[in-house]
Length: 198
Image (cartoon, rainbow, N blue to C red; front, side, top):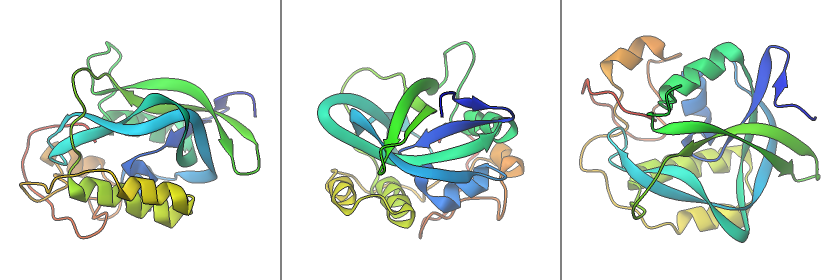
C-alpha cells in the first residue's frame, strides 16, 4: 500500500479508545480492521481535559526507541467525516485534534500509510481517568495488541472520574450507531448537554 486514500476509503490508525470495538462501531457504520500495527519512536500520552472522560485525552508524543501500537481501520469517507466530528477536528485548526499523516508497520513488516488523530497540546500531561484508560486497555486486549504493550498501558497512572463516564451529549445521540452510546465496559452515561471531543 502506498497511498492513504483508496478510492472511496482511507486508512486510519487508532491508538486510544477507538481501538475499542464498542466505541468505534458506535461512531462508524462499517469500520474494517485491516491490521494491528505500530508507530516507531512514539508513545501514548495524555494532554488537555476531556469533559467526556473527566481527565487527560490521548495523543502521541515522540520517544525514540519506543513503539506505539494500535489498529489500522479502513473507513469510508462518510465514516471518516463522522469520526472527525466525534474527535472535534475543525478545518480552521481550533478543534481538539488534527489529522496527522504517517506510516505504521504491522507484525509481518507490511507498511501502511495512515491518518491518525493528534492533539494540539501545551503544558504538562494530565492524568487520564481510570475509566478512560480501562476502555483503551479493553480495546487493546480485544484487538490482540502485544501483551507487553498492554502491560505498559496498564502501568499508566490514572485518577477516578468524579462523575459517571463517558458522557454522551444530547446532540451526539442522533449521530451514534447501535444503542446510542458506547458502553465500553461498565461505564455509565450522563445527559449533560455540553459538547466535547472524544
